[in-house]
Length: 213
Picture: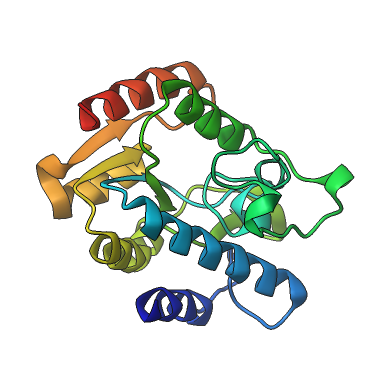
């Protein structure tokens, strides 16, 4: 689908800086793997025809920073039993399988979605690039307001491509800006990081149950 390819090309062209790593930019094998994974994911989700979109804040170093997929670590991409992301679907990883990266938020997200057996939502981040601390690319930081404002255009594009009906904002940063644009279409879900695992599980289960009556 040309709109997906245009979307990925626009992501790859987004200018990075000393505080942000564009996981989709460049001509390295690693960047090509991340674009490849995102392309597979978005095309697969077109077939799922999702009505719900979960929007987090930004990629984490141990998750999307390596895979190119929000709330997804290399552990999911090497899991043969995974409903969407297992290697049988053609996903690739940067590290050797025995060294596959693990991310707690990714594990929790897919664990809860698997438990409640709901229709698969589209998952994205309000700022789709990895924000890190100065001189510490392995350290996550919360995206700044200006970054979120610049990144929301990509969320808009996906909302149009997939014709999403309901948005679950994972985290206050995501909720604040999405509510400005989409109002009652947005529900709040506690971000799982920093001790939020229990509330995340409760909020996501409730939200997906409401959105999938």
